[in-house]
Length: 76
Image 1 (cartoon, rainbow, N blue to C red):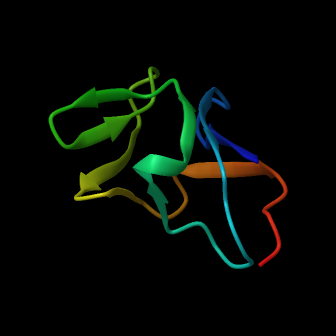
Image 2: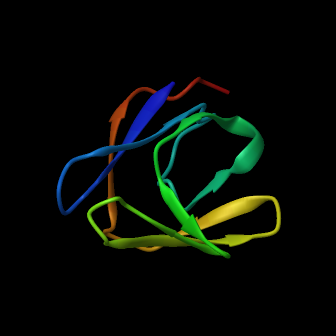
């Protein structure tokens, strides 16, 4: 499990089950275990107001540099 934080204010946004190596480009909605983000339609943002990403079907497409990641991914 990893914790995804806002890059601007550091607030926790998601607890997410990441599988495998590589950058976090999008989050599958089914793998999010806790969600502290603010959603207005398809737009996803931090409570501080920073735009994080956009819901596109079964995942959230994250904008580069908008989040930081802590924790470790499951090995594949």
